Every structure is written in structure tokens, then in C-alpha cells.
Length: 116
Image (cartoon, rainbow, N blue to C red; front, side):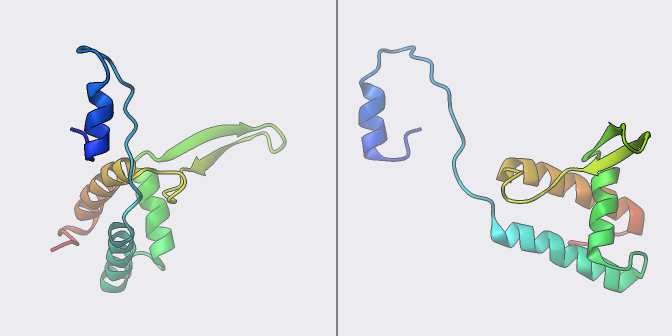
């Protein structure tokens, strides 16, 4: 669906059956991002299982598979490199997927839904 009247006019200029490459638009949600961090802080405070929300965040990324293994030839060892959830590195859709999986893993770990 066109989002503006101008978009509708521009689309009408093309023949029927025209194929388009679509790009999602929009920015990451600050409230959603803040909910994630507030939830982690509340869980840390309530359970004392993690010293900080950053520690819990690292474990959640690991548990959800948001990590890559790389060989460090200088150290002759494998290293784990955690993916970033920063606004520059993760779209809102990607963050939605991560958030849902992270909350599932967190619910399993602590025995209750931290969002309720």
C-alpha cells in the first residue's frame, strides 16, 4: 500500500505486474529498547543471579545464538564475538525477533515471565 498520495501516483505510472524491490523504513523503537534493559535490570535485582544487566545481556545473546566463533591466529585460540543489538547493527524487525527469543530464554531460566 502506498503511504502517501504521491506514492500512489508514482506507482500508477508503472505497468501492471511491475516488480519492485522493497526496503523497510522506520527507526528502532526507543521504548522497546528501554523495556529490554529495564526488564534485565528488574530480573537482576529480583533474582541476584547476575551481577548486572550487562552480564545477563551477554548470557542472553549467547543463549539465543547471537554470537560468532572466530579463530584468533595470534592467540592460537577460538574467540567468541557477540553480536550487537545497537541501533546501527540491528533493525527493528531483527530486534523484535531477538527480544522475543531473549524473553523466552529468560522465562525458562528464571521460571516466570519477567514481562508480567
